[in-house]
Every structure is written in C-alpha cells, then in structure tokens.
Image (cartoon, one colour):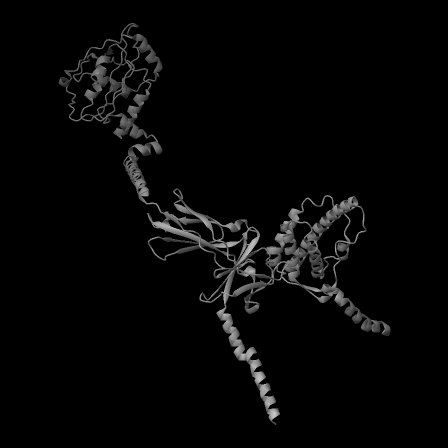
Length: 458
Length: 177
C-alpha cells in the first residue's frame, strides 16, 4: 500500500512539474500573450535604399525593455537563404540586404540566445516606408498671382516603389498648429496668392506614402526639411490702381460727353447727315426768300426814292448780250393782261409816261426790289427781256420792258440777279396797240416766282 | 443497340477517370491578379532580357528538347512554370555578374513561391545542364566550353522569354474571366 501510495505521489509530483513547465492551457496562453505584449516590436522596410539593397528596421514598442541579450531574426521570403539576423544599433535592429524576395510572408522572431521568445508574421512589401522628399522650393509668379511648389523624391528613379502619394503641409508661421494639407501624386503644386495672407511668412513641408492601390503598402515617410517663404505685399497692386482708375474715369466722362453731344446735336447736325430729308419745294423757297429786316422803311412814296438814283434808261449799250438773251427767250405772245400789267407797272401814276431809267448799277446797288418790297409785301419782279420794237432802229437802244410788280404778292422773294453787264435799261412808254412783249419765255426764276405768287394769291 | 449502350455506360466513365489527371492542373497558381508579377517578377525578367540583347543573333534555330517536352499548354501553365523556374536556378553562378544572378534568383524563386504544385510534379528531377564529357585535349575543351556557354545563354534567353509569355497568358486568361 505504501509503495502504491508513494508511486502515485511520485506520479502526481511529476505531473505537476511537467504541467508547471509547459503550463496549463489557460496559464500558458496568458504567459505567451504577456510575452508578446512585452516583447512587441514594429518594423518598417525601405526598398532600394542603396541601389538594389533594401533595409529592414525594427524597434521594440516598449522603450524601457532590456534588450541587452535580445536578437531579432527574419526567416522566409528570402533569396537562397532561410534566415537572416538583424544588426543591433543601440535600441534599433537593422538589416541591409538585397536578398528580400518581395513575394510572400516572412517571420520575424525575438530570440534570447537560441530560443525564440516571440514571432510575428510580416510581409516586407506591406510595411514600406518611403524615403523623405527633399529640395522643396517655392517660386512666386507675379503674372499668375500664385506660388509654384516643387520638390524631389528619390523614388522617381526606383524600380519597385515608384507610385507615391505626397502630402504637402503649409502654415503661417505666426499661427501655431494651423497646418493646411494638400494631397497630390505629382511633385508639383500651385498655391493661389488669394488664399494666402499678404506680407506673411509661411512654412511648407512634404511627406510621402505608397499608393494604396498599389502592390506596395506602408507608412508615411519622414517630413522633408521645411521651406520658408514670404508672400508679397499688395502695394504694387495698389500702385497700379490709380492709373487704371484715372483711365477708367476719363473714358467714362468722354463717353458721357459724347452721348450728350449726340443727343443735343442729333436734330440739327447728325440726323440730316444720317437721314437726309428730301428737298421740299415750299421749304426751299422759304429758305431762298430772305426775311426782310425789321424796321425796314419801305414805302412807295416817290419821295422815298429820292435817295435812289433813278436814271433815264435809253438803252443798253451791250447789244450783243441783248441779242443773245433775246434769242434764248421763247417768243410766245404775251396775253393782254400781262401787257396791261406791264404797261401799268411802268406808268406814272399821273398817267404821263415817263422814262424810267433803271441802271444795272442802281438795280444792283440799291436792290430796288428791296426798296420796293416794303411792309412784307411781295418782291416779285420779273425783268422781261424786251424784244426790239419794229419802230426802233437797229442801233437804237434795246428796251427792257420794265419791272413787273405785283403788289398783291406777299412773298418776300428777291428777284433773281439779272445778268446785266452794263448798259442802261430804257423803259419806253408803251405804244398802244403795239405788242411790247414778244419773247416772254419764262425763265426758271420767273416761273418760280410766278408760281409762288400764284400760290400766295390763292 | 444493347451492346452500344453497354459500351457507353461502362467505357466512358473509366476513360474520364483516366483522362482527368491528364486534363487537370498539377499546380495551383497564386497571384493570378498579376500584382506580384507586374510589381516584382516582370522587373527582373526585363532586366535579364535587357542584359541579353546581344545574345540571339548567333543562336541556332532548332528548338531545345526541353521546350519540346514542356509547353505552356492550357491548364498546364503552372507545371510549365514550375519546370522552367527550376531550370532557371541552374543558371546561377555560371560566371555571371552579381546583378544578373540576383535577378535570375528573383524570377526563379519568385515563380516557385507563387506555385503550389503536387508532389507528383515536384518529385521529378530536372536534368542537369552539364553532362559528362569524355576527356579531350585542352584546346578542344576550351572551344567546347565556349560553344556550350553560348548555347547555354541562347537557351537561357529562350527560357526567360517562354516564362514571360506563359505568365502573360495566365494573366490574360484571368482578365478575360
């Protein structure tokens, strides 16, 4: 019995010892979990950091850990070898090699001597940390009023990790922690001036991360060295404004003046040129006939003619002109009424025929028709060419049967200038029964006046 | 009529059973989405082909026995790639540059990493490149060596090209599906 009891005791003791070393299921898990937490570490890889060599860097998460005898080892997804040991640099574990396969998972273990304490599965291509960008610069474009930000990255020349996402961060130096972020895939960025403060100092930096949709994934790189730049003042813009202002004001005023002038001169000047009116006989006639001066003393009293030099008209000296003039005139026979009018016109109110001489000079000088046309009465006068009377000599004076006066007319139309060169107009008394007028072809001026007087009589 | 149906019932199923292993693929291919190939393998393949541009003008046109034996047939792409990758390994450390050997290793080992072949495929031993030659005088050995090297490079270039073609075929098939 005692032997049996001793044997059972031994067995139980052995069981306890064995279970103590390996641990109960629950206790073992806890210890492993604690070990994992205690010896937890994180790693990142950098591909082609030195030509074709890659690097892998690992550190323990707990900075207080005593890593004196701890080593790290990576196994799997390696070329031609099974495992590689890390090199320890102070608290950082580092590998630089080109033997990463870049396909498949690797296992990184924490080793204490030859014993692996904890292991972690990792894929080298999923923990890529790009190299920090560099050479960031900002150039101000005055014409475009913007800032062009450019930077460089070593990944542009790499074969594996080529596609990166960049994060450009900028802030005004006086304002703390007010970073503005811009994401882009290229190495060039444009910042608009109006989105920045004028005359202020700005700080700008950039970092990169592998493109999420790419085969390679990982973490943000370190920030590039910061670049400082100052935004320009707006004085230059203000200086140019007065010039523009004056130009705009002057142009506005000139346009306004033009518009006013156009409105004012529209009827008188502009419209006749733009829309000329058709000539109207009546209006033209009115324009031709000058209005008499005011306070014009006109009377038919002979005494008022005292100032007028009246000369006896014997004949006109230039016979050639007379003949030419007569030839031009039509030789219709005048009517009796006209003859009577003619005759009456030149007769002396006393009845005695008189030689009334009207020289061309006087005719022109004094504008006898002007004298006669007083009181706004008609100035209708026609000087009819007088044909030669059969009784007169050839050399005798040619007679122009005088002035045709129509007192009834009211038109103040001056007679057309009579083309008398020289000579004296002789008005002979009308012989009875003798046709005085043979060529009474209406001249255009005569017909004009006649029609006007006819219109006035009506 | 009765013997015809009897033949169909008892003849065809065994035939299918016999042909099934022949028609099925011995190797499963991972990374058929093309990410591993385009991001890693294709870079090394292009580097190798770039460095072998001059090789080809002196190569013989006759097809090697290897290519007559192993083809990138339908459903046999994985097997071909397995055999080709293992063959590629043999060309390492043949007086090549480090960079050349590195890319050779990347292609061969990267391809093998993506293949999951059965023991039937893995079990076959690939023939070695070098064969036993009878002893000859030094001069003849030298020329033979040079010729062998030239033939080897021609074969290597052809092999890398075949691997590239086969990968493209696999990815094309994946995109079509």
